[in-house]
Amino acid sequence: MKVLVVHRQQEILQNIKDQLQNWYVEAYTNGLEGLLAAKLSTFDLILCGQDLPVVTGIEMVRSIRNLSLNQHTPVILLAEGNETKEHWRISQSLRANLMTLEEVGEMKNLTIE
Image 1 (cartoon, rainbow, N blue to C red):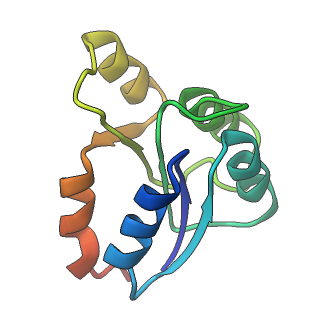
Image 2 (cartoon, rainbow, N blue to C red; image 1 turned 135 degrees about the horizontal axis):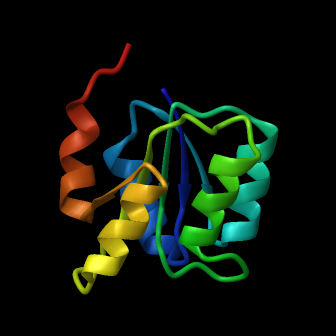
């Protein structure tokens, strides 16, 4: 499984890579690099933080949904715990899921064929 992970904090990127060690993980620390990767290559799953430098997570997902090879790829926006109803509404409109890092950690044993 090929996963794109975009988060501003290197230690969180490494944590996710460690949790998903059986999968191929391509990681970036800003939204622009993540967006460019999503426009150049297909992924089975995209995980991204919301507060990214250069291009925010919401802007990145919106662009992916509009113009990329990954228009239909499942997307997980990493929840920070202070999400409002508006965050949930926006994530639903972008066909993205809000999940905590703990919930992502539980995915390490997931098998997708």
